[in-house]
Length: 318
Image (cartoon, rainbow, N blue to C red):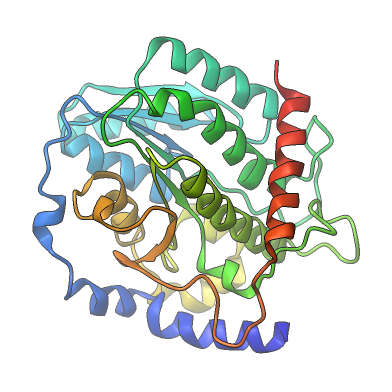
């Protein structure tokens, strides 16, 4: 079944996830959707010093939004901030240094941020694909700690702040790779068998989609969405998937193309007319499972995921 899922997914990807797939989809975009003034609205973007995160931050700054870049590396974050400010002529760009793989750091940052800032839109973009099994200082598998637990803690901790504003949104950058995965609650930290970083990443991205659906049901006053940026030519793809990048380079999307739907979900009035909790690709809600792929988790498995994440989160809460 996994061979079938992978084969179907790759054929779908060649057709839809490439630059030509974006160009075909973009013919149906409504350009006015992004014709918005974001003055006074506050946006937090994790993993914002390069790739899709930085491209998203640039588009939001261009439209006058208050931008909070959450990054791990101060030098790269400051350089990204300077570039965004010069290009947008918007001085309202702020850097916060946080390692999203450190549960304690994420908690502390979110709690401190909420005390002194308002927040309208959270964009969970930071991602990690480590190809050798690696543990964080907390003893957690690094992909899971960054992609799933970090996203869970940051979002959960910022929900009270989001509830205080008008038109709050949470956008999570997932991946179409999650279509190849069924939620596996027996091995959340990839301890069994041979470690495969690409599979661990795709499993985390499936978890993010489930979290988005669950949050949407729990918090009806906030608009939640997840999305697939397509196959984009980003530093992360170059470093973590070098052979894929080498083979596919001419077909990959630009960073701006990858960021387009993130920006659309974060800023456009059209996005919040869609139901909360959906998964988007090129400004359209799309299915979260391939046909006949048996990748649906049971409600009980999804409950187990939320319970496990809550348990981890509380363990590291200061």
